[in-house]
Amino acid sequence: MAKKGKIPKPKDPSAALAGAEKPAIKWRTIAIIVAGFVVLWATSLMVLQSSQDSVFGYVMVGVVAVLTLVAIGFGIYVYRLTQRSRGIADILAEATDDEGRKRALAKLDEGDSKDAMNALARAQLVGRESPQDAIKILEEVDVDKAPAVLQDDVRANLGLLYLMHGRAKDARALADVIRLDRQPNAKAKGMYAAVCAEAFARTGKPEESVKLLDTYKADDPEFGEVQALLYRAEVYTYVAMKKRGRAQTAMSRLAKIDPNQLAPFFGKGTKPLLTKMATQALKAQGMAPRQKMKVQRRM
Image: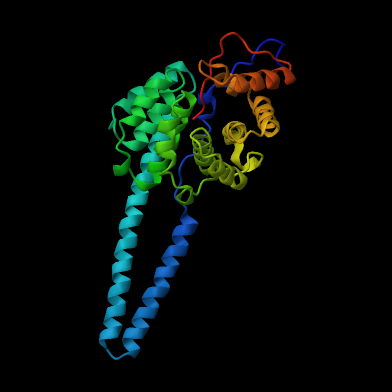
């Protein structure tokens, strides 16, 4: 337990990189898809045979053939994307200390600096020491040209950096186009929801924020470390709705998860109410804010 008057040192975000789950090909899903195409081919050939070489039979075979080619092309695309993801995951796994981060950054710098996957990895490593440099890296990505599965990852990570540095309007512009429905991963989806909810709350749309937070509840253990971001979004949402009691509860839960996450509430330009609530939450944990707190963001 931390001593009174001190904020515990935040966990090193790189510590979990070595054990991060690597992207993997889902062979069971592939087997199901292949089985489906086998059924389609069998059915279309049976129709062709039974229709005595009618036009309908040939059309059906042609349609199945086109679908098969499209599926093969998409499969090759996904395979290459997965291999690239595994390569970057292997590089990030080396970044368990300062020297490892330097080596990982050197390897990433050899790749395409505007590639979305590469940029996300570099921003993750750079953001620990220099959030502004991480913002610059992600701002250089042409999101519209990035793979669809990465577009919202870039927007959410950049949006979170904006929010951490008082750029709520910039974060809102990204939140307006983030689509949670195309993200299958629970933690990533929770992060999207947190970023969008906080951006909405801080730019005059707390009602939209509440809808998201009611759907993606911060106390759901499925969200893991993303719970902190959801509680942070709750703080801003309930303050905007003048529900101070619920905001204080969210702040207290955030402090319990990671007191370091309260650092931004002591920054310049923060509303006095938020600073007061953060101070109260820290005192409830047996701590007190330092004159100057520095947050290390976990991406």
